[in-house]
Length: 86
Image: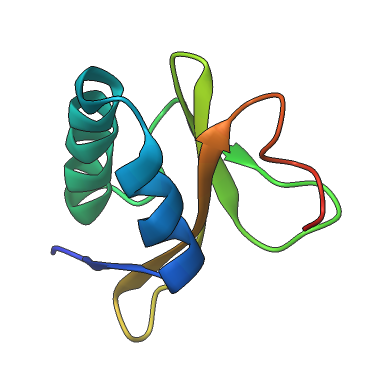
């Protein structure tokens, strides 16, 4: 019962700008979302659709489509910036 993780262009661009050590930890968290799209540390977003996962000082914001079995990552960033509208 695995899900496919898809990253939007903005999330992919932000992911590549992050320091390589942090990027490796984020990649592990994204891999974990394939097996469990709602892990114990995930929180449901308030005021938006989807969930967030905390990885140190960084956040991964994503939505889950259970019918298509897809996890769509739409934002990855530092906690001070990730919730701001761009």
